[in-house]
Length: 480
Image (cartoon, rainbow, N blue to C red):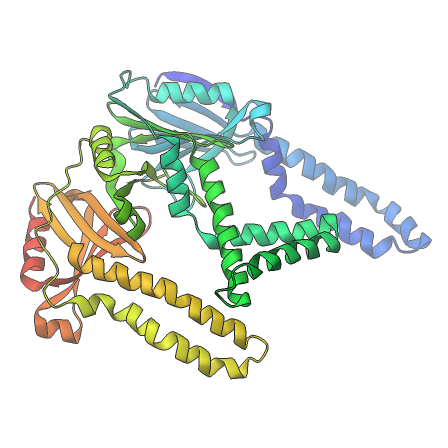
């Protein structure tokens, strides 16, 4: 085994990360201080036992340093070698051929220190975190990226997303709830830092803005404004996370770069891409836009992360760029459609929601006199997403289906409020189920549920497929 990069220690800033693990040790001097330093006599008793506190603080300083010294890494021709431990030494080898994604992050607070965070994922890793994450110097991170790409010296295709596509993506995928949480935290902290007068002024400005929306009740207007502000904050956050965005296709790798404040580089092995997912909302369908995601273990892992390949782009343009970046994937024409007269089966859940939401709110409101009005307003607002969901299910009835030929399967369905067109290699389908209700059994139809290979459960559900079509699909999957 020929070593390309010798064994090295992490960046010294990693000592702080180890220190955070042992902050609980500070509870010892804290408890002692609270217990004894209350009277002059207690202060004297504390001074007699101060060596305990000094020992704890010494451990808090020495243990992270020992852990940092005992953790080394190297990159060889065959993969990564990690050695860690002080008393008990542990050596981990991750073969190069099994690396799915190698990610390098440069947060704004590490860049002045010329440090970067590197994460490596394999198919055998944890679904919530990388196989290992280390903080190293930025120069070493560049060397590792270059070493990873040493056998891929030619760029087959280069794609750089226009900034307008990133803006549209940020607006479409933003979650109002996360923005509301950020807004609430900022509002609370502003009150603590600037005083209650400033906090009340903010509330007054929000109420004045709600007064302009006279066509709807004032309480409803306040809720709508809070959700809109939250959505705007989440959109800006997504914009900074993904702008700029570019993808380079090498013979065996996809090199993806994004991020304005935290710069990220991802090297995804093409053979580890398990499926393509082209997503659309109703608004995307009206504007003829598509967003393309890939499933490659390690890419898009983490909070508020997206496994993005093509941002919100015109559908024809998105298909063209996807074909150039991943020509190995071959979408199939839809040949199996939902059975006729199955529209009610698609709409049953949102319809029940529309029928029960307002009556239930009127029943519960008298028992909550302080919250009754707000509850009724929230029930009225809930009809908007329910009506949206009903529209999605109607469109899903006429667009869903399955296409299979050769070694690829294309699945078209809706989940929540989003339309999915998934292209997956047949070898990555690990299980299929055909589920029938009593009513579907009489009509010889059922829901086809397909599980695909991934770190966490990934299932795709196509509703109301005929029994004969399901049998044909099972036969195709079982063929070698």
